[in-house]
Image (cartoon, rainbow, N blue to C red; front, side, top):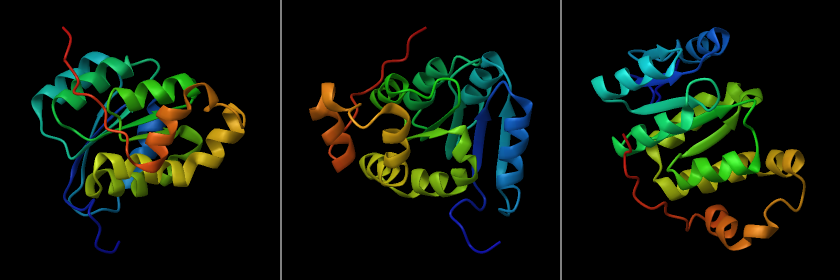
Amino acid sequence: MSESILNGKRILAVDDEADILETLEDLLEGYPGLILDRASDYETGYHLLRSWTYDAVILDIMGVRGFDLLNAAVHLGFPTVMLTAHAFSAESLKRSITMGARAYIPKEQMAEVPAFLEDVITLGHRSNLKKMFQRLGGLFNKRFGSRWMEDEKSFWDQVISGEYQPKPVILKK
């Protein structure tokens, strides 16, 4: 594999589906020196978040209390990607963004995870969200309907333009 920002990085993936963790491992195995820590439940994921420094974190939403882990990861300063199948909705997308996630990827787009991770590690928060919408905006429109942003147009315009900045996260016990 050629030079990549992912070489030598440490990444945490938390998902309750073993096949998803295996697929992520397969997608990332060709990056020299990359360490992928894996957890299949909230408790293990939370313990790993508190035990290591990560260059990026990948979280499932359902099954592992993904939003609770997102809260902790963002509070600890780890760039975080939400990866989901069952919680793929406009509401979960907005919640992920407002809580500080840098990307929100449907599991059907898992092959794109390395590219999203490169962006998450190299780009600032606002640029990440803008680039995510450039890549996945059509899919969001297809899945959520063409008018899904209308009720909160100002918010979504800020996100898409790269102007949105999430408020600081307060870690809850």
